[in-house]
Length: 360
Image 1 (spheres, one colour):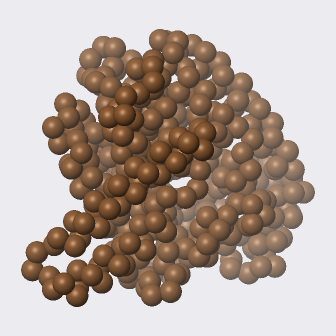
Image 2 (cartoon, one colour):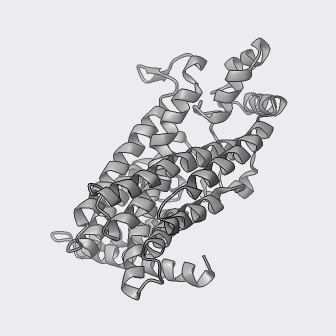
């Protein structure tokens, strides 16, 4: 996307933000002072948590509508597609604010996580995540209530939120707890099979499929009709592969990318996450290497974390990922080339170009 396109996209964000703040200022049965405090707080929260990053999820909706219509969009169509794209970004913001609290993360997009900001408590941030989610439905109702695909758009967000929360449960419960305390680390739970299930639900649907499905829905494709069903299925098939590839990239970057490049401090090792790296390491580890993982994985100890990272390097997991990435690229190219109608391929080529060999 050119800078002009990004500017247009961000201009739509500003309109949505203004509408939401206006809603807050118009809440009944609250004093002017309380409404002013709420408006001030969320005027800081929204631009801090929603825009930022690469915004690929939101821009993909616009790209998808363009691809499906096979022409430049009218101003009204662009605005509609951008509003839907921003709702995907809003969903991302909801998930990230909550996820950072769950993981005890320090930074996000190069700045302190929202819950660590001055004048924001952890309790505030939990509630803010819930409010961010609700704002999605407020905006969809405001702009699409009379649209033929209104119910379908709502259901896509409802279904995707549930799918992602199931994936988050699997992700945060890699190690069982008893009476609020983490039990002894059980490395047998870290398998590639469990990992693939977690990634499908935690990442693939909301990071890839949702944007494509929103474009299809907005353009009038019925998932129950013969043509629509085939297109949604093709989108899902490609997005599941792209999403798994993207998450494995994320796991590798969490361990090896410098924080100043990545925009956050990775904590997968400390948090005992069921990441691709630990699953792959356990798959090929000898007894000595497995002992290192048993003694150091999942501990908030810088020395132990470094021992795990050193082990990953010793096992050449970065090299294995490079080989995997090339294999995934080839698989995606072959799968995309088979998609009909041919113009629909452009959407997935766009997505693949955004993630292939990314560094953050």
